[in-house]
Length: 294
Image 1 (tube, rainbow, N blue to C red):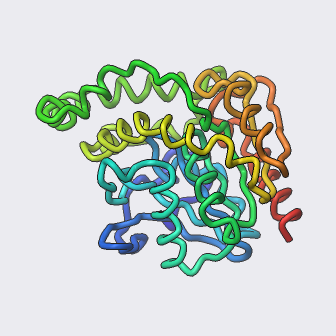
Image 2 (cartoon, one colour; image 1 turned 45 degrees about the vertical axis):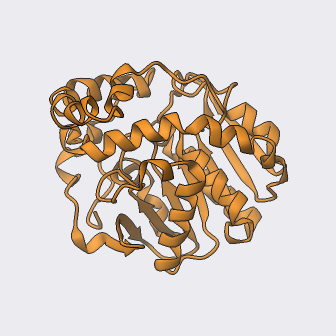
Image 3 (spheres, rainbow, N blue to C red; image 1 turned 135 degrees about the horizontal axis):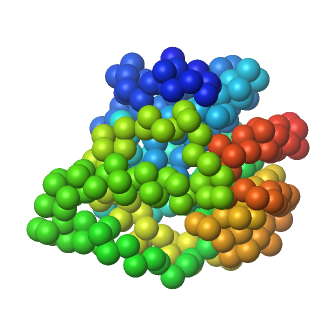
């Protein structure tokens, strides 16, 4: 992953995992990008994705920051956590261990979609160990879960194992491409993402992680919905006004009303994948938080 360069040329994008980019943390493997020099910026990918996806448009940050982009547990090259340890607070504890192992202190944490819940939990649990937050198209409000029958079936004891091993891999390319187009809408999927090996990314452990993450989300965030008012870290919330995945009024505006030191940036005509549609807005938000936190 360390040789990935930002380019619109598909041939410049490698999706292969490199064992040299892995850490052993608490007996589990964590695959991550660690590039650049300067104040640390940790970037967290969303549901069903990998670090390479969110890192690609943000690699210019390595010119002035140390950029750390892990595959979250159960995704990419990172070992999954037990199903009951996938909640945002448990992932925050996992991330804290990863950053300590990487000798990273007081990072800015930028997080996309549902990973915003992990970033917020990190700031709640370790308030003196985070410099600021950038929440990108956040999905962070307790919300009636989508039906998602296949993911629900993937968690069943016996049928679920069969679905994870045989059904989902067959459907991965078709299902994944359609989900990607829907997530980007009304923006176009960039060329450099068209080579994502979706079938390789949809592993059995990943499906179980996705399902557990979604279905454990509401209880965890409902319990913390009022605690965000006490977070004193500087934050920028980026909301695509055309986001059909995380309604900006239900999520971005909701969390912006609760954070005491926050700036909400609305991006007209932008969907859920803000980091690709408007990468400069994300990088400017990192700069703004870094300036306030300095």
